[in-house]
Image (cartoon, rainbow, N blue to C red; front, top):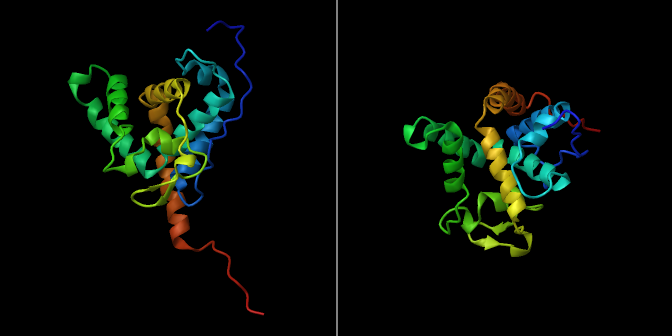
Length: 192
């Protein structure tokens, strides 16, 4: 990337907000926003796509980060780290891509037959009656540009900077969970 390049101005807003009750979603999004805003050239350089890297890409990337803070994201990361120890994948990046392919697979007996990307990029949660009730109107159409951005994020998730972000996030998530479980900061209703 040349020194004259100025990345487009974007807002790092996910397609659906993080759930306040899931501390990992909130923390990963906050860390992502802080990093991407402070380093817009590094942020832009992540993406390998034929499409434009504009607001949609920023929203897809932010949605990926929210997902990484969920149980689904933790499961994906755990699998990817295990794969990365296997020499057959030849590189950490390829191991993470392989784990993503499996995690994002459509499987009727799991996740009600929706892909992780469909949950991740849905503006509203598409399940109405677990395990089979899906509101098809809420399932997003995933474009190839979206897939390119998600794959780029998976590649980035395999890098040292992403590992540092995870190391920073973990104690923050634990602390936020301890705070919530203590109920020490819940408002007390005063009786009249």
